[in-house]
Image 1 (cartoon, rainbow, N blue to C red):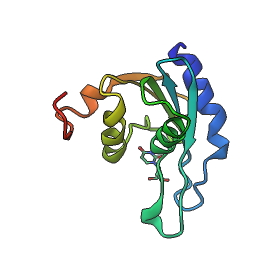
Image 2 (cartoon, rainbow, N blue to C red):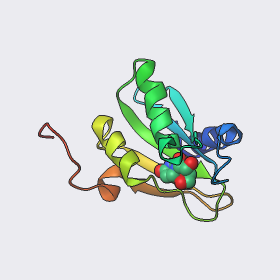
Image 3 (tube, rainbow, N blue to C red):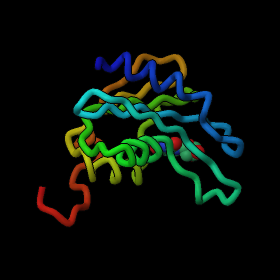
Length: 129
Ligand code: THU
């Protein structure tokens, strides 16, 4: 699947984000190596530290469905800045997909492309990669 289509799928999921505290809705679409897509949205909580980011929600959905190999991730948000995955999400993504391609798009802007290697060099792992 092309990056633009993945961004479109993430944009379709954006209204389902639950972000009453920050007002900042985020959605992610994760492409498996078999070509399936799993979406996730941020799910906030009144105990703010319990908030789940969109990227980790997408990983959890995919892994729950039996997928552990991913090739691309699209992340979209309503703000002006490109929604780069936070550090915790980068580490979680690196568990399954150290060579992941990441496409981020804010509300109106063109998407930008990164690799997970660029965003999280020298990630923690028990295993030698
Ligand atoms: N958020 C994400 O969903 N992904 C990130 O990588 C960073 C932040 C969410 C969490 C919270 O609901 C809102 O953005 C503001 O931090």
